[in-house]
Amino acid sequence: MGKSKALLPWKARPTLIEYQVRALDQAGYAPIIVVLGHDAVNVHVALPDDVETSVIFNQYFTQGRTSSIIAGVLPLAGIGTGGVGAVLLINVDQPRTVPMLRALREAWEEQHPPIIVPALDGKPGHPSLFDAALIPELAQLTEESEGLRKVMSNHYAERVLLSVSDPLTLTNLNTLEDYEAALKLV
Image (cartoon, rainbow, N blue to C red; front, side):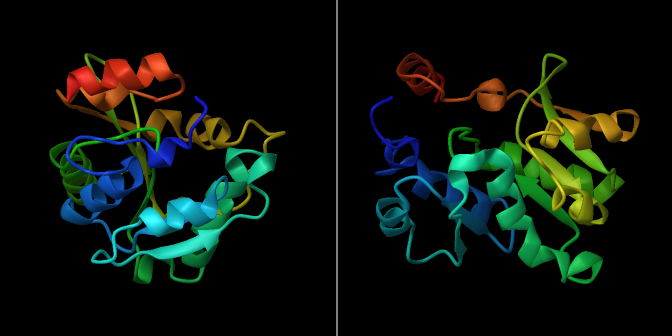
């Protein structure tokens, strides 16, 4: 893209990272752990001051997404089910609305499945919400063992798809064209 995805303008917010953190906060997620890698200093500065976040710098971010997932879930491993009931794994390039994020959290609170995933027209999207019981499994991810796909396949039969109508459910901002198309959906 030529620019840090986290620093792209989004909706009425100056950056995608600010939008995403505020959406998570307004949807009732806590703690909010932000794992930084590429362009960490500039992304850190763009975080909103009035939303409580824990910031972790992943020095191994070039080794793949699993290194960032591990960096984000390891602080939760000691908390277990006594403090955190579930873990939402969301990438900054997957902007999601407050209503969709809230619906996902509320559905997990009602059903407590191992994994709950939003689905648009029957197609699974992002982000996935994992029960805290899966934190040890998430903390053991490797790129060589298919990363998050391995956890998803291990619990495929127990996974719940939550039907949502949010057009951003299937959106990933991987290219400039993806970004421009997503802006038309909001």
